[in-house]
Image (cartoon, rainbow, N blue to C red; front, side, top):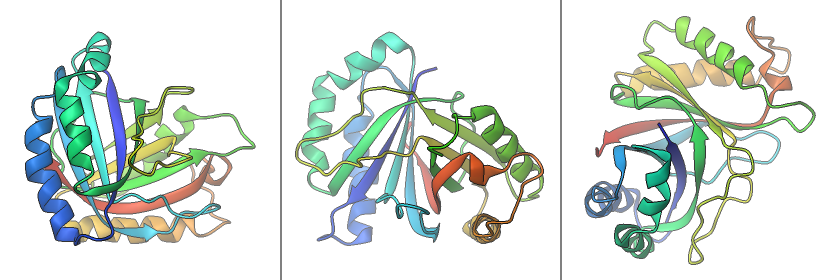
Length: 228
């Protein structure tokens, strides 16, 4: 099932609550009519738990997850009148937006809170999705509070979604792994533990040496809101 992820940067002249309110109500109401969409999750980022490495953190205040019914309806959805209305409305609450198609599983059961790990492939190594998958499965299995995990890998060479009126991320995350939790305290504790592991350059995970696979790693906690 085709999926796209879009990273949002909130306008700096509006409060965090204004950003949250507009995105989850006015904007979401428009997005519900986007043709071909079967699932739409908003991820409202609370704070970074670990600053991005080797290049700084990504400017991400929200993460959009969109699943489509089939490949042939994705383009139609983004060429629709609804997509045009979304682009106009984005200027009311965003200063930046960058998105792209990802390889991912179908939408999972709702997770009230998520721990996100955003990163890019290490320049000195070949992309290794299987190794990241083993690493994520290992981390999820060792945390009793984790509800599950999901991995999103940016499709190589794909055309990115950007807006002329908004800033875009020059180097979008190529890997986005999420871990689900039932409450924010559990998500934050997992973020702190993960941050401690990743900040230790000598740490070698039993499943994969993640430092040799990923770079510019950014860990953040987000609240999930199910729109569709």
